[in-house]
Amino acid sequence: MDPTSTPATGPAEAKKLPELVSFRNVTKSFGEGPNPKVALEDVSFVVEDLPNKGELVTIVGPSGCGKSTLLRIIASLTPHFPPTKGEVKIFGKPVDCAGSDRGLVDQKYSLLPNLTVVDNIAFGLRLKGVARAERGERARNWVKKVGLEGSEDKYPSELSGGMQQRVSIAATLILEPKILLMDEPFGALDPRIRLRMQELLIQLWNEQQETVFLVTHSVEEAVYLGDRVFLMADKPGRLVEILHVPRPEEPPEQTRRKPWFVDFTQNLLRRLEEETPASTGTKPK
Ligand SMILES: Nc1ncnc2c1ncn2[C@@H]1O[C@H](COP(=O)(O)OP(=O)(O)OP(=O)(O)O)[C@@H](O)[C@H]1O
Ligand SMILES: [Mg+2]
Image (cartoon, rainbow, N blue to C red; front, side, top):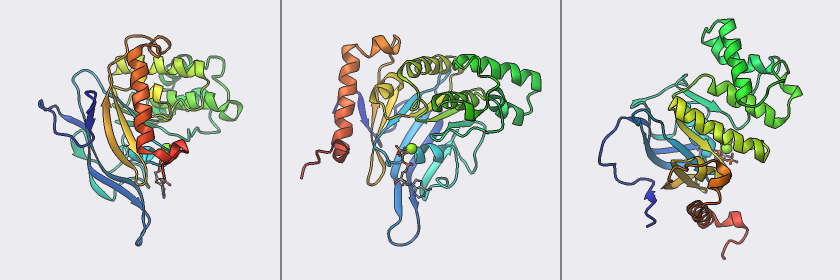
């Protein structure tokens, strides 16, 4: 087996750290009767609570393989949560509802249409009871971090899809959740802004030490950002392999030209095609 890969349900690591997120034989089906839709089948993994640093897990797999379902189960959001079978623990305990320890940047970024950019970003702080002046200041700081200076007082309908996506990212990151769940967060961004957001995420991840689960359809993004890449397959949705990635030392533009990075992404692409041959349009008969 490739030395960087381990089976998804492999043996427990030798040294025991507290568990931050654990799935044990988690299955999620939708619908009753003899043919329920199985969105996730028998998924098991552990993300440990590493001292003074979080892990960045990226998730790749074909459309419909259960990536969003997996994130929404961690976030404890219906109708995906609770799972049909299996055990989910967050911070070592079973969960029964969403909490501010977990923040989700949803695939369908949902902003409040009647609030400005600043007020959308500050909204969660308002719910937490942070004073108006402080939340305004912190939100304006986030406007700059995500490159939206000048749009502070605009409403979502006045923004492009990529701009709305950045507001949504800022609105979640400002709350500094211990577990950050990002569902294709950079999908609507143009390539230049996407690289900038990747660098920002790495910088924040270093500062805030949160654990991140990030779903992406970009293999390069998965390898650049991930400490581990969860490779998923469909029919039924499942976790087939966990790949460990060396941490890049350089920005994305330089890293993507390094031989190890090219080899890694090629290997991951090959594995994706092996697991989901139909996606290439050349399924062997
Ligand atoms: N609320 C729901 N009711 C019924 N089926 C659902 C529901 N949510 C998801 N599914 C089904 O579960 C499967 C997994 O869906 P999920 O949204 O997790 O996939 P995904 O990997 O995130 O796909 P994509 O890459 O297109 O976002 C799909 O077949 C989907 O149709
Ligand atoms: Mg999805």
